[in-house]
Length: 282
Image 1 (tube, rainbow, N blue to C red):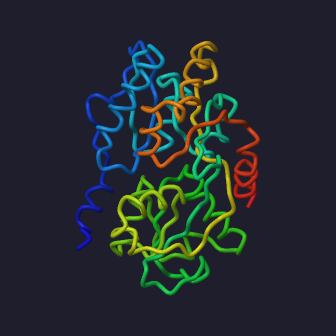
Image 2 (image 1 turned 135 degrees about the horizontal axis):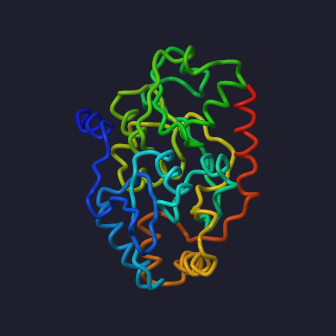
């Protein structure tokens, strides 16, 4: 039986382990993350931290926060050195950020926004969700908010009036869980997360179905603050690029359901930037 109470408690907040707390006095490399979908998240991040420390010779600290906005603000204020961000917050602050590496998922530096519905719901697209309850992941998520918002705008609709209620879960995984247990009729998520959860948690994901799949967009990149030392930037970037050719790195990538990293380029996110302007203009 799916546990509605567990999902509700999970949405109430993200527990911060002491070892991922940010500190302005950290002397190594501080990397910001939002919640990932793994049950053994702390153990995985510990292994990834150890791997990066061995390859870079630097002390690595992962800093986990519950929203993209919190992570973005800490990068631009220089409290963080790097972050794994969505393309949406990247294009909003691209003048103060530097692209480092983009993950490869199913062999490509791309992903899709998925619109989900409970498996019993009859909707076959956003037009079948009127009056329902909608779950979004984060107000600064491209796949989990901006894209579905643009679809509503193009149809001349507003999220506030089209749905009976909408809410943020602050995690793509929590969107899937909310739809699966019936807390929401539908939800918007990164297709990468849904596909990965379908592999890891098939019973949970079987209670959802994809009713719309967007075109491909640039995969969420790793970015650095714009003024990060150039030699440090090059060192860390090279470690990311070589992960797939290293047995330990490949094992970490396998757990993330990724194929590797390539250098990130601004052109990968031009279509997201165009959508930001479209939504703002509307």
